[in-house]
Length: 274
Image 1: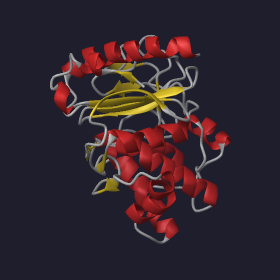
Image 2: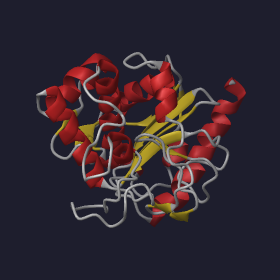
Image 3: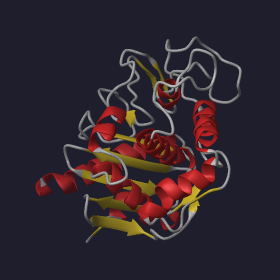
Image 4: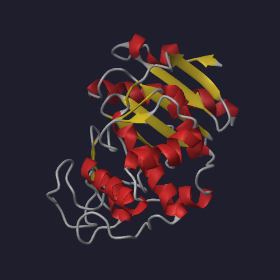
């Protein structure tokens, strides 16, 4: 396995950072202490997404069920199209007219799954996703939008599920990584306004966004999420590979510069493997 220590050397606190690159079956590169547990911030939303998709396949919920505010559905909540602001229940736009990144929407999604399943969301998530994937160091400790604690080793298992799903059908993953309301514009936090601001069901899709936190050389079909705690997870279907990072330093302008450069190194590493 290749060492990626040089790729994170320019990050603010390299000793606290960890990074791994994986194919569907095995890691191909790593750096740092990939066992160190920390809050993964908005990468939590990917776990909430997968939990909702399992619930959908089990018949517990429907993607077009009414959920959250009047006029919104599960699909709207997952696609950040329900008109909620970043925080708080007070709507800031009509349903389906803008892409507004929202913790509140994901929290309402979790509440709906819990109500339909008849159990707390954390329990459902553990039984439906965390335990089956063997994510033994992962725990939801608060909001399902941003308060999961995990490590890179566990997040690699999640990334592999998105590369080659076992908990959900490939067709469900394809639906979730297809742009929803594809013409909606909005702000990608930290990277400015985009028109369109492409999003699937819970997954941010790179499409033609620039600037972006992945590499310019990542394919437009790349999907994933980054988090305010300095975390990211991306899956590039064309490369048939994924990358996971926990920086140990909160997201700020350093990441806007460092992450695309790091991810470009990763893509360069993977290209000959295609």
